[in-house]
Structure formats: C-alpha cells, structure tokens
Image (cartoon, rainbow, N blue to C red; front, side):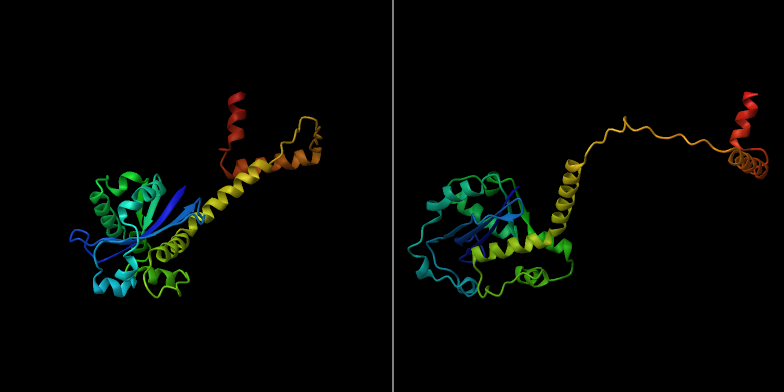
Length: 237
C-alpha cells in the first residue's frame, strides 16, 4: 500500500482567477511506514502572491524568481504520484489548483494519475464532530509535535499530516498486529500423531451403576415419565 501525503502553497485562494502553485510537498508512506522518499518543489508562479497569502506562507516573490516553473517539474511529479493513494487535508483546495496547473499544460486531471484521493479533513469531521479540525488543531489533539510550524510550508505540512493520519488510523495498526500475531501462531502450530496412544478403558463399578440407575429413576419420576431414555426403552420393547 503506497500512500502519498501532499500539500501545496499558492499565490492566493482562487485558481480560477489566476492564482498559481508556488510549492508542492509530498511525503511517502509505504505499508504504514515513512520511507524518506519525499518530493519537494518551489515553483515560479510567474505572478506575485497576494499579501494575505504571503502572511500565511512567508515565501517571497523574490525568492521564487529563479525557481522552476510547473511545466519543468510536471513529469517528475506525475511519475512520483502515479498509482498511489493521495492523502490531503482539505483536498478540494489543493486538487483544484493542481487541476488548473495540469490544464495549463494540456494534461488530464489529477485524479486520472492516482489510485484515489483521501481527504483527512472529511475524516476528522467524522471522528471529531463539532470540533476544530484544522491541521494545527489535529496536531494538538493527537499529540503531534508541530512546534516548528510558525508558517505554512508544503513539505512540513505534508510531514505533519502523515503523523496525524497515522495517529487517526492507529486502530488499523492494532488490527494488523492482531492478524499478524494469529498468523504467526498458526505457522508455529505442531501436529501430534495420537494414533500410537492407547487410552485405558475404565469400567464403572457395580455400586456406581446402581447409583446411576437410581438417579435416572428419580429424574423419570420428576418428569412424570417423559424422560427420553424411558421413551426409547418403551419404543424398543
């Protein structure tokens, strides 16, 4: 199971109105273990960021001037995410921007390259209804250290999201461990051949037989003659 945690930073809030992606961060999880095979780009958006966006991510227009354009990294990005489950917090926002970037390059929409898209914001709302479910709130609730997150950053946020997701789905770990443990027990079971054993036959004594017969008589009286063994005896005779 290959999962990619993905986050973007953008020049503003509206891809349809010309805002662009300036940073992409991806973190790989394979069989619920972080691999370190991450992907990270800063991108030249060919336009300035809005002041509100600058206050969120702190990535200056000057810093981005010499960075590659989305067209320069699109093949590498698509190769990296191909066939994986993509996990995003508030997926419609990031996917909307990526779709717009792909459209500008004449490429198919984002979901056509991946195995599926999971929105952890939707998951969190189902798990914690009525509570704040921002990434910072989930970090606090699930005891994920986000002390280094003074500003938004795509790679840092993707790393934090991976930790949050692992904690949110920790019950799956327990289930997998239980199944694995049962499998190990099954594999270690030894077959024992009992055909060589001769079990002793111990017959009841006369006294035990008499006592048993007395108990049956008492049971028959208590049931007004409706005991099964008496009915069988009568049918045979």
